[in-house]
Length: 182
Image 1 (cartoon, one colour):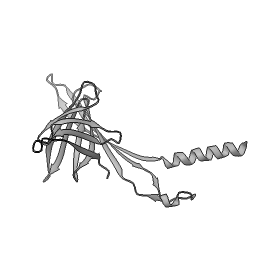
Image 2 (cartoon, rainbow, N blue to C red):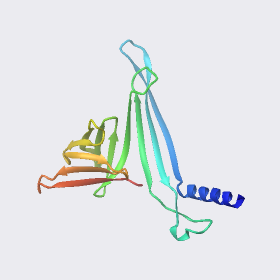
Image 3 (spheres, one colour):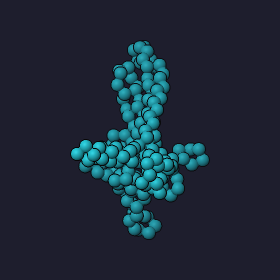
Image 4 (cartoon, rainbow, N blue to C red):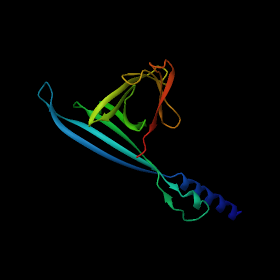
């Protein structure tokens, strides 16, 4: 009986080792002093939390070995930006930046409660590709912009998909923004 329990415990610990994720969080806070209309001095803060996530993967050729080599896996980066612009202790706004890839270009998605701002960099300048607002039923976004006009949603892999009407061909097409892995 002891051997069976030890075997189950060992199997459970090996299974959990295969599903490990390495997470690195860094927090940066920038403060400034401001004066309100009444002449009172107060602090403003911008807090940026950067989360880098990397899933630990082992060499599949060493599947049954005890000490397996770790193979390179992509890193996912998310940034959360919080802004405090008044004299209370609470942050006034919070937004998240996720990075996506579409047709070889890197896109930044600035996500707040109900909105998306889709931008990319061209010649060291941020270009707004589209804006989106979350629908009432929270399942999709209505996307409008110079590059896309349509409906967008996140799939089960975290990719953002925009379905839009191609003005030239008059056909419905999909733009798939894959989660950007560094």
